[in-house]
Image (cartoon, rainbow, N blue to C red):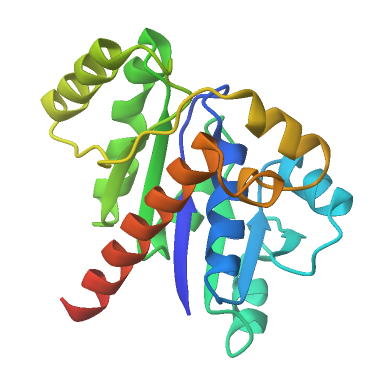
Length: 210
């Protein structure tokens, strides 16, 4: 069982969308997936209630419940994806500490990029593999993406090679309890998610070997 923690101590960066997208992509790839929703807003849990598909399983978890939830998942889940709250909290450190991989979603905006160093320090404190994921980017704003990569690299961090763009398909999919891959597997949004998941899975496999 491997664990991916999605962490960013700034809201509005599409964190829950990233959780849902990767979880469904992994499930479509044949993995048994559990989402642990540690965000008090419970956006992912509410999405799970709208779903008809059995996978991924979505469970709300507090920090105190986390060890028990993970113990229960052993032998049942191939992959656990943890959604952490955006505010400073004890939930994020607990979820980062046990992660095999930490992903930090950020939009190409000043505010989240200014907040990213806090999350990076948290991840480095636990010596966890960490990558930033540029999310909700303007589909026609390649220069903006390039500049965002440069800012991330200037922090001494790494940006994932795949970018998720701001597309209406994500909103439509969420409303029906789906992911963009389930809504339209041939859409641009679905292809981006598929490419991101392929990269994430390769990173996880590389981590196993090292």
